[in-house]
Length: 211
Image (tube, rainbow, N blue to C red; front, side, top):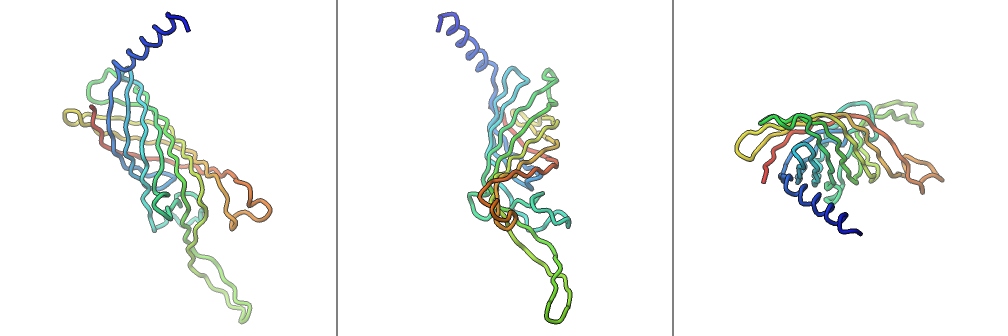
């Protein structure tokens, strides 16, 4: 590598670090994966590019969001402690960076988790002995599956006091659910993973501090 290339690399590295700003964040969001709390760290470069990584803490909910008998949509339910944990990666682009206290942005976010589902509903039951027909309540789980939620949308952050700020984000997402379950896939296809897509939304609100 030439001396000019090394000098250019060092210059770019120093420039990026000089204009970078760090922040710690905590947020609550509801989405296709249901509700979670995210604790994250972000770094802003040149005022308008922000990259964030975070730890996702899934919140189990017993109540189903609808009665449509969905298998995956908003049915994620952790069956052990490890399944409560996930990852978040995020990129924000601030398109009006010169505003002092209110900064709007567009974003792309990936949330990843590995968890089972919780499915609750009602199904028909037919008694062969007396020919009676009834509706019975059931609860069952499938998985675990790998959940990859990709969201694009808009948001903003607003300064509230010293280095503290609030932020909100909302957008639409496509979630890939990867895995298999013997109750959902008959033989001989149980040995293969399959891909299911669910489409939905995400709403997030949180608090950050710059340092």
